[in-house]
Amino acid sequence: MPNIKSAKKRVIVAETRRQRNAAIKSQMKSQLKKFAETVQAGNKEEAEAQLVQTVSVLDKTVTKGVLHKNAAARRKSNLYKAVSQM
Image 1 (cartoon, rainbow, N blue to C red):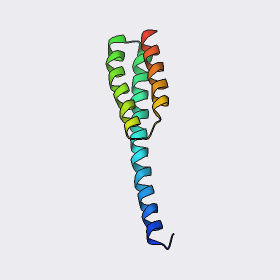
Image 2 (tube, rainbow, N blue to C red):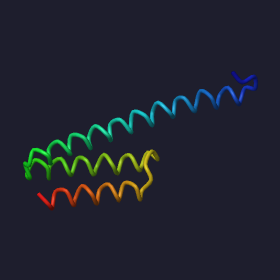
Image 3 (cartoon, rainbow, N blue to C red):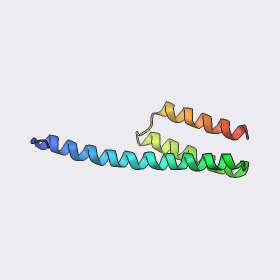
Image 4 (cartoon, helix red, strand yellow):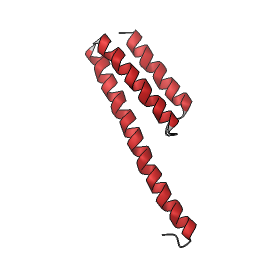
């Protein structure tokens, strides 16, 4: 444990941010799994509805700074491709 006051604060802030990032990442992964299950089931209308929600979650993840914008763009591209190939 650090002795300096600013270092103590950095430890607390880093832990808070880690928990926040983990929650956001978990939400993103859950949405991606839900979308994958919908695509696997073969229901195109439901997959398109899930696509909108999934893209929204990915965009929010980028806004929060958890995911890089190019990584999100790549994932969104793959999602659109999966729906179009159904």
